[in-house]
Length: 186
Image (cartoon, rainbow, N blue to C red; front, side, top):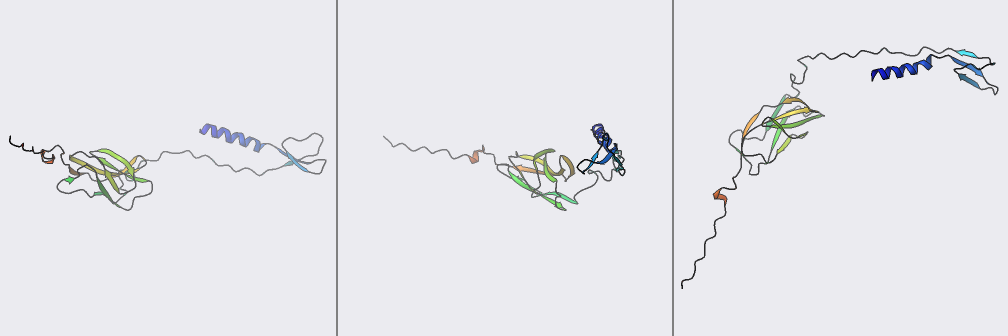
């Protein structure tokens, strides 16, 4: 890419370095050309030097551990809310929402994504209220991370909670068996 750009710039610079001639034609019009006509008095046009800029060689940035996203917290507060601190979370269909407390507010271009049991869960969103669906019963861990594109900038502390769902095959939830109707005596 750089070689192509350099060749293109050199090709454009060659005509700029060519000689320019000025003369007056038979109709009295002033004509500028890069080829002096035969038999006509011409005048050489002196052009001012063209601007030039030396190309800067790009250097790779030196990684400073103090400025890397993992070492520098973008948000002073990043935590999950609406999870029970003790006891189980009762969600019969396994669907519930969790909030995210952020300070300062979520920056443009940043997104929030949940990490359920250490794995990314759902789509990244810029809304600080995230929904989980059909989560199986039992103990789970949940955290939220801030993304910039696909890069993780910061992650909250991991919260452990238990989902409690009603067991629909429980005998206590089955409808009572129909009682037989007594037969009349013969």
